[in-house]
Structures are given as C-alpha cells and as structure tokens.
Amino acid sequence: MSEGQIRQSLSGFYDVFSDGKMYRTRARGNFRKRRITPLVGDRVQFESSTPKEGYILEILPRTNALTRPPVANIDQGIVVTAVAAPEFSTNLLDRQLIALEISGIKPVIVFTKTDLIDDDRYQTFETLAAGYRQIGYPVVLTREPFSADGLDQVKATLADRVTVIMGQTGAGKSTLLNHIAPDLELATGEISTALNRGKHTTRKVSLMPIAGGLVADTPGFSSYDTLTIGYRDLGHYFPEFLAVANQCRFRGCVHLNEPGCAVKEGVESGDLMQSRYDNYLQLLTLLKNQKPIYNKKK
Image 1 (cartoon, rainbow, N blue to C red):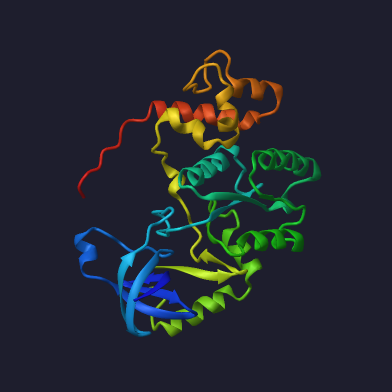
Image 2: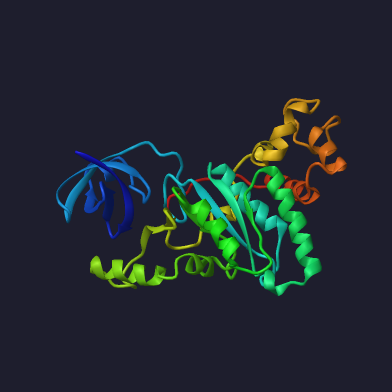
C-alpha cells in the first residue's frame, strides 16, 4: 500500500501523485455506500499494480475542503481584486476574505488593473492595502499591473502551498496565472492529450504545478455567495475584531450597541478600518434576518 495526493479527478478516475509518479486509480467500491467522495488535494492510501490501474483504499484526514471548486487541504486563497472595471467594492472583498477565514484558508489579496486609475485613486488603494496588511493579510499592489515585482511577490506566496484563486468575473484571475506561468495553457493541453480525453467531454478538477506550488487549474472559487454562519459568530472571522474582543466589557459582545465595546472604540480611534466595520454591520444585519436553510431532497 502506498500514500500519495490526488492531483486530478476526471469521470470517476483519480490521478494520484506518489514518489514522483502519477497513478490512475478508482475509489474503492464501498466509498459510495459510505457516502465518501475523494477530492483533488486529498492525501490517500492506495494500491496499484500498474500506473494505469489502481484503487484508493483510504482518505486521510482533511484540514479543510471546498465545494466549488471541489478541492481539499488548501493552504491559501488568492483573492484577485480589480481596482476598476469591474468597479471595486470593499464589501465584496471582505465577503471573500470571510469565506476563506470560515474555511480555515489563509487569504492573500492581489489588486489588478491599476493602470486604469489615476495617481490620486491609486493612493487611496495604497492606504487601503496598508490597512489590510496591518490586519495581517499579505497584499500585492503595484502601480503597473503584473509588474516583475508584483509577480515575484505572487510566486513567492505560491511556493510549497496548495492555492485556490477567487475573484469577480473580469478581475484578472486567468491573466494573472498566464503571467506567472506563460506555458500554462500548453501544459494543460499536454496533460489532456496524455490522458486521452477531450476538452469538452466532461468536467475535471486538477492541481497544476506552478511556481513551486500547486494551483487549482480552474479559477472560480465561489463559496462566498451565501454565508451560513450564525450572526453572533461573524466577528470571529474578522481577525482584527477577534484580537481585541476580549477587551469588550461584555462577554459575547457583537460590537453593535453594547457599551464598552473595544471594537467600536478601535474604529473611532482609527486603529480599526471604518470600511471593515461598516461591512461587518451590513453582514450582521443580513445574517440576523436570514431565514434558516433546510436541506431538501433533490
């Protein structure tokens, strides 16, 4: 029995990378009865008589897992955010960051399309970036989009990590990847030919080796569409709020109307970002008014 990592899922087959080689496998028959679905990124135990025929015997414990894209054991999520076209929104950015925090995935913020704004507007984003860096989020912001310095920063974050990429349509996710790995499309085509499959026959999920790390090859993380946490838990996913929450007068403070709230005091003093607090209040109201979602049989 060997141990490896699922690098690609395609039509019930799982390509497992182990000791420098790729093995084509299927899931063991009882996985379906146990309602277990292997995911790309899973560490697994498997047996294989040849590189083209084998079986996954066991899935090792996951650190996290996503639904869209269906990938497990992700280290970080790069949030690609355009400063213009589409119009920038701190609310959308914060929702994306919250989704990653909920999933236990480290966020990295990459601003794009900086050539579309003037210097005064760019200065606003420099101030914004400084605020997010103070929280602890790595931020890539350069005056020229996809500059050598900016790309080097992104490459450095990719090394030795499993990464998913998320962002609005048109934010520049694919363009970013193509700048980092210009031969990415060629590499994908070569793999497609090697596995003898057509481009449009079925959906696949795979991890592509890029810049010394692994990147989900189809940008499109979209689990931030709906937040399913309780409103009292929302503050746990704002790291800067969580850092001072123990200084609030009341335990369980939701940083709304309570007196002696350290978060509100931090916002008033300028130590915490006003935009983050405004977005927190908007999401808090949304979650408080959200109707329960019950699972329905399809």
